[in-house]
Image (cartoon, rainbow, N blue to C red):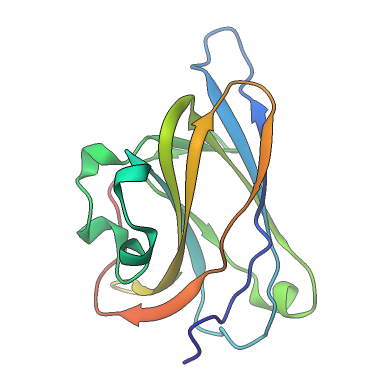
Length: 168
């Protein structure tokens, strides 16, 4: 299996959360495109944000499931566009759309804060789900309102013998 099967152009433009009672958050609309159509095992993407990002090695994080490397309390609670919350959010992948040049679009609200690492894991669905690889990116600061866009690192597919599931 190639080390870089997916080269996502994950454009992360940040928008503020809305509503009078909403906790301050930065929104990350994510758009994924596939460079090569070889990752047929990818069934979903799991997005997580880890606190104290600068103290972590993205190279090490990408070697195996994030859930086996960090404590649950190190993962910040995220919210998706449908209002689902969790310490990791899973989004199904439509490979046919990606392989034909389309993109996967999703959005994640991240609490305002500093020193995060954004981790996007490629997983298979099944019982249990399987880990295929991940992307890790440092986020120095997330502000309410508009933030500078971030282009995420390519997903490095390494495979691994672990269950990537992270409890909400």
